[in-house]
Amino acid sequence: MTGNIMDKQITIMVVEDDTDINQLLKTALEKAGYEVIQAFSGTEAKLILQMRKSVSLVLLDLMLPGISGEEVLKYIREMGNLPVIVLTAKDSLDEKIGMLTQGADDYITKPFELPEILARIQVQLRHAGRETEKERITYRNLTLDKSSYQVSIDGKEIPKLTKQEFAILELLAGHPKRVFSKEDIFSYAWEEPYIGETKTLDVHISNIRKKIKSVTADEYIETVWGIGYRIHA
Picture 1 (cartoon, rainbow, N blue to C red):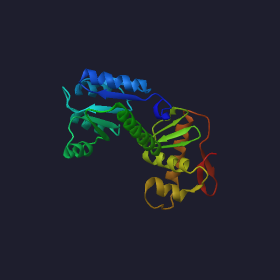
Picture 2: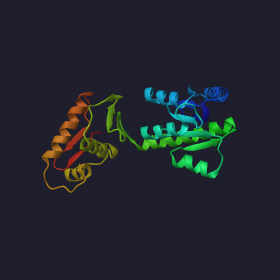
Picture 3: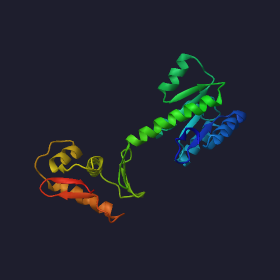
Picture 4: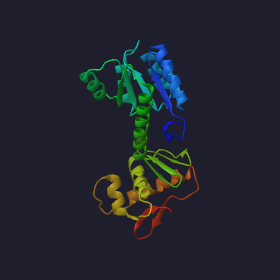
C-alpha cells in the first residue's frame, strides 16, 4: 500500500458534491490501497460519521448542498481529532487561515493534482498515528487508552476503571521495571501529597486486580512487601 504505513485497512471519506471529482478521488484512493466512503452532501457526511466509527481521514469540500462543509468540520471537531483535509476553490490567504483556525488539518486548492492529495493524506495519517501512540500505553498484552480511560487485555475490555484506578495502572505499566512506593503512587493518582493513610490505595489496587481478573487469570500488579507495588513482569 502507499507509503508502507498501513498495517490495517485505512478508510477515507470523500465529501464532494461534484460526482466526477468524487469518483476520480475514489478511484485514485482505492488504487492506492485505501477503503473509500463517498458522501455527496454535508447532511450525508454527518449521517455517515454518526453511524460509522472507523473513518480514518476526511477529504472535505466546503461548497456542499444541505449542511455546509464548515458545519461538517465543526461537527467533526466536536467529535474529536479525526484528520480533515479541506478541498476548496478559495485561495486567498484569509480563507486559508480561516480554515486552519476552524479546525482543518490541511487544505488543497482546486484544481488539484492527485499525487499531491495522496502525499498530504500520508502526512496526516502518519501524524495521527503518532498522536494515537502517545495516547496509549502497552505492556505485554495489556493496553491502556488514555483518551477513554479504557483498559483491554488481549483485546478484551476490562470493566471501566475510576480515574484514580486508571492513573495507578498507567503509572505502573508505563514503568515496568520500577517498584513504586505507596507514597509515590498515591501522590500520582490523587495529585495531592501522601498523608500516611494506605487503606484507600490498597482498596483501589484490590479493585483493579478484581477487574483484571474478570477477563484473565494472569497477574498484572505485584506487591513488593515493605515497599509498594510494581507491574508484574
